Image (cartoon, rainbow, N blue to C red; front, top):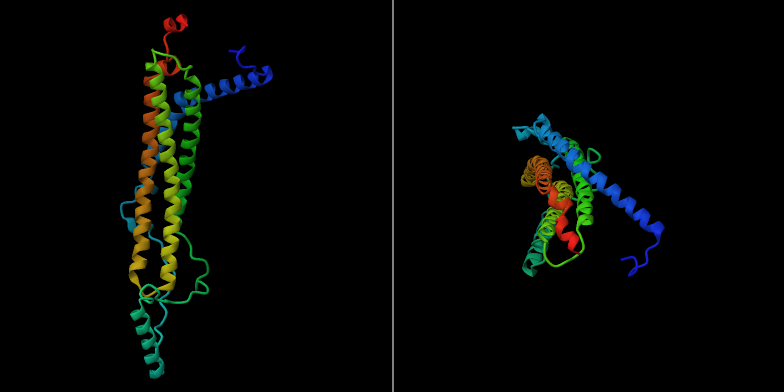
Amino acid sequence: MSSLLKVDNEIKTKVDAFRERITSEAEDLVANFFPKKLLELDHFLKDPIINICDLKEIHSEINLTVPDPILISDLHDGLEAQNVKKRKLEDGAGEDKIPGTKVFVMPGGMMKSNAKLVDLIEKVKPEIRTLIEKCNTVKMWVQLLIPRIEDGNNFGVSIQEETVAELRTVEGEAASYLDQISRYYITRAKLVSKIAKYPHVEDYRRTVTEIDEKEYISLKIIVSELRNQYVTLHDMILKNIEKIKRPRSSNTDALY
């Protein structure tokens, strides 16, 4: 191999050291970190903060008062406004352009997020990031164990590839949990903006509470999925560790 491709000895030494570091770290993750983490998450699922039965406890007060209605004092102005609105509707331009209330500042200052959900999210996000990082390390380890491509005796290699695919799937699912949290904040912000602009519409206020309840339930499901993924990966790798580390038998290796 060295005769076909010239590799600098210093670089080769550093690459070999990297491979050894990844191997040592990944084996420790599978043997020790994964089982410890799944037990931690299982304990977290029993925490009262994530087992609230009455979801009204997680509701956040929306401090946006309903302004007094504006009375039209001039009958002529009122008729003129109605005529303008009629012309817009006839032209088809005013159906989705209801002006609402102009918002210059929030009466109570900055509109706060749901504090209980924010606290829970800040506890769940590091767990998601940890799973992504650890899966990436283990995936790299298994990929480095895949031998060169040859004809026959590839059953062990197929197990390695299946393990890599599972690790990649877990990575993708964990990343989607982060996207879900971002979408929650964006959706809630748009709804609060609607409440500020249309304070008389009660449905917007109810939708915010529905969004909060949905996110709370989703966070509990996320924690449960994180635990299950640690269990699945730990079990899958342990059951196939022999084929993952030695995908081809020594007898076959001696033939080449």
